[in-house]
Length: 97
Image (cartoon, rainbow, N blue to C red; front, side, top):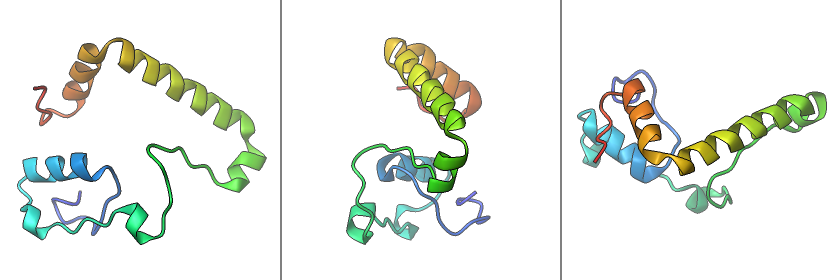
């Protein structure tokens, strides 16, 4: 969507985002990276964020999501080759090497 000009910004891992944008023809000189840590957001690594309202109103949904996320992460770690092929099936631009 960013490469097409449908949106003005994205969030994500800078390294992966840059690779994906470059693969879609975006010139890296046209990309501005704003690291969270340098812009007031103090997070470490990967995080899952839920609003206080959701935590209060639907803790079962959060528990189910975290359970599914954990299961998926374990499956990826146990079988990375199959995981890469799954991602490639959804996004053909993925370079499996």
